Image 1 (cartoon, rainbow, N blue to C red):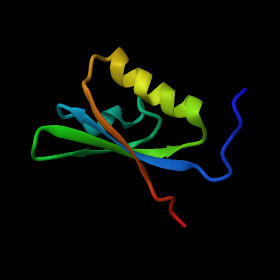
Image 2 (cartoon, rainbow, N blue to C red):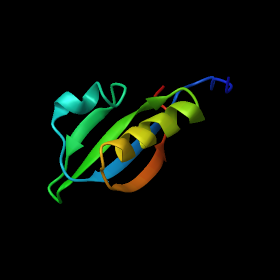
Image 3 (cartoon, helix red, strand yellow):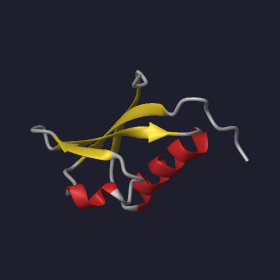
Image 4 (cartoon, rainbow, N blue to C red):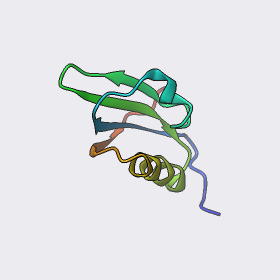
Length: 76
């Protein structure tokens, strides 16, 4: 089992296309934000690298195009 991180790490993941907020549950509660440029930003926390890879795998499983993955500062 991979080690858990002391504080969840937050990420901003940008994908091509726009998703309905109903997809939030599919992506482990990540917040979905539609952008004017036709992309969607998924924002949320993961407890370890395996959880991050799980989110990225789900993006691929539904045939979405991954544009970027960026770490964000942790919330206080």
